[in-house]
Image (cartoon, rainbow, N blue to C red):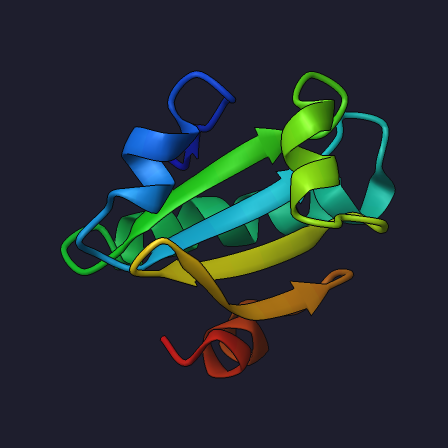
Length: 103
């Protein structure tokens, strides 16, 4: 299961992580986000040893969404060493998402 990421834990979980971090920016009302949810949860299980996988609810964390320029959801961002390394927008099947993110 992907962890919940908020403004309170973002720095510790994402920016200071020694592992790559996959962040799914989503909202409860978003149809493609609902389709993406199980994909993100599967990635969280599959990558547990090598990466951190989390979700940011853009309705609850508007400042984080704005800080990272999230204009459409779902947006999945890969962070490495605290910096954005890759980004994928819209629903993407798991295999393609892993390829897009280099995981």
